[in-house]
Image (tube, rainbow, N blue to C red; front, side, top):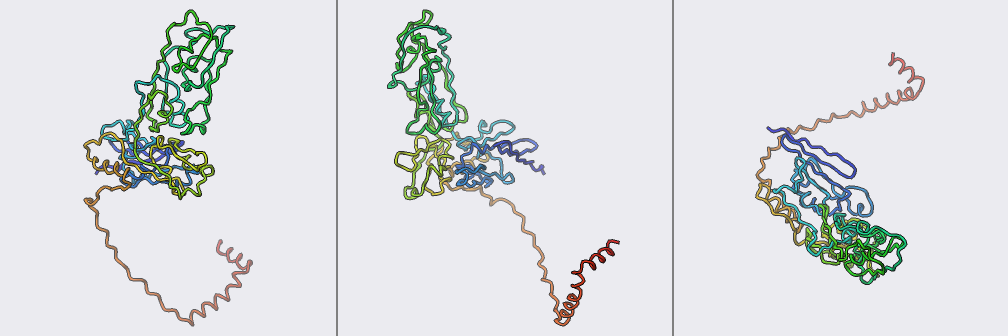
Length: 425
């Protein structure tokens, strides 16, 4: 008979790490509860009911607690929770290899990627940092102004930005230190005003009017009256670089909303619908409660003018965390489809299919356990209750009389001290 697996559970900062070790394999589930939004998808699809969704009402309004609890004794380490977590809060490794990289593990296929229209610019990186997961990184490969034409003092000229043309792409700010982009505060970036920058300023003390910024601006929004340096190229400087998206991307769509060049394609993990139930919103206090705002991993919620709350379906990933956190039951989320990698032909293929189906249906079909051999319950001998002896009222009265005569001596401190002294000796 093979030895029982060794299961341990430890906590490291916000990570709850559960490990199963057998003679052949080591499986590790790393759950970052700070990254978890409390959507409950993992708890719904778990085939062994090892996961339980916590008090999302309290968590949504500030309780610092894990939204999901894992019972290590029930966990089968199948990896479904990690494979279909929309916020990447759960990750599973098998012998230090990410389970999602194994061909036999289907997982949600959510992604954002640049297409051929990408210049690139700084808008998507900044909005992803402010309202998303910080998954986008932009690296420019064209030279900066100082590398082409070093700064010259005492040069006269004029420079201006046409704010009707400027889209805050940030290319000029990368190219030359004379341009200063002013980012907005996170709460100022909303679905109705998604541009992550508040303003762009020019420090004319650091500008020598070399005209190169006019050449590099993709919108022709910069006009310079000055002198081109003799060493500077005569042709327009080509903006080059690369946009990369990390595995932390949740495909929220903020990058698409700010890209001025239709240069990003997003494929969401879930397709569905989110709606507000109007007659439940009468007691809604979005400023005092803020639960839907707090748990939303894609920052899709905002307060409209003259209204209570509103959500942007284009940024919603249909995880359902807000519905769990709303104490008024004023939010309804349904999922129609799940984008995922193919299910492989393995022994657990049908169980994976049942799990994936429950993400949209809401009904979890658990494994058929009818074939399990269950030993019969042991037959326990039922003993007759003991016979209670009859009590003679006359004897009971005599006992009480003797106790009454002894009680004064027991209450006497001196007598008790002498008795205790005899007992100790």
